[in-house]
Amino acid sequence: MSGRTNSGPGPAITEPDDPRRTEADDGWEDGEDARRARWAAVGAGALLALAGLAAALLRSTGSAPALVPAAYAFGAAVCAFAGVLGARGRTRRALWLLIAGTMVMALGDQFD
Image (tube, rainbow, N blue to C red; front, side, top):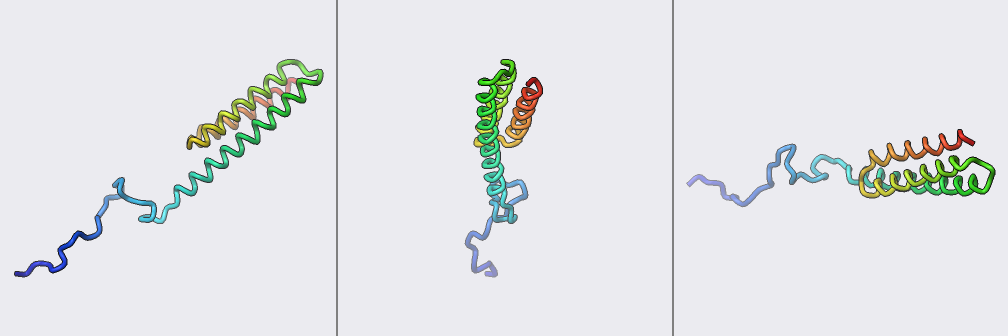
């Protein structure tokens, strides 16, 4: 009888695309990078939304055309929506919406 004496289950051999692989297997810290990206999208969205709303309120009290505060308010709404998307993990879409919202606010400033 020449069998192995330790025939218990050994460590599982996994393929590169195996869903059982963990982050510790490769040394990746994707979870932490994704968390930072989500927080950055949420923070930037909230900050730009507050700045847009403040600008819309300031421009609405002055003698600016109605298009100017409307553009600031719309850009702020887009940035707030981008913050919500960023919180849900859609950071790439959130980035593009932050850019679009900021561009709408800048366009509204050009009409003043």
